[in-house]
Image (cartoon, rainbow, N blue to C red):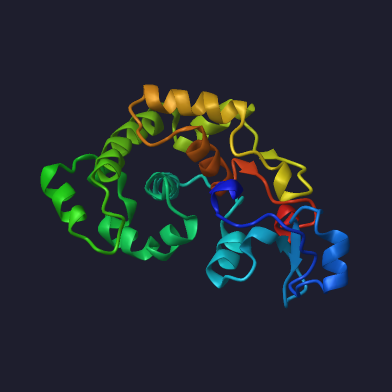
Length: 224
């Protein structure tokens, strides 16, 4: 999930309590960065005000993932998100897990017309035929890359000299929506047969799976 796709305004927040009018007047031009929760922890401000976002921020976003099925789950969800909010997708996540056989890659790679029609009639997921067809094509391409490189994470890490990239952003405004690496990886994914994996979706995947850690300096998860 790219922070630029969340549909949130970029404004200043230093705590979970809105600033007073005087503070707001003095700080309104400062970028939206960190919030302090009821538990005393500072978090990236994009998760403010929504328990689902907070849980996702604290437990998943930016945490290195090496499991193939989790990587594939994010690819399906991120591709489905195109043109929508990430929160919309998160709310449908359990329905996706059920509809997609808990993201069993081998099973999904063998799906065809019958399964596509079943998914098109599933009200729990985003019923976009092109996105659904892409998810099956992506399973086949994903399996091929994973088989060749040992895992999908191994392949992604090759673009970062084998190491997770931890950035040093201090404000949300600094976090890019795409990077040169994301552009390169997106091109390679498309060559391998992936669909709905432009540079923005690709960078969101790198952030979500912790190949790139974009938690802000001062966020407890950056050190966690």
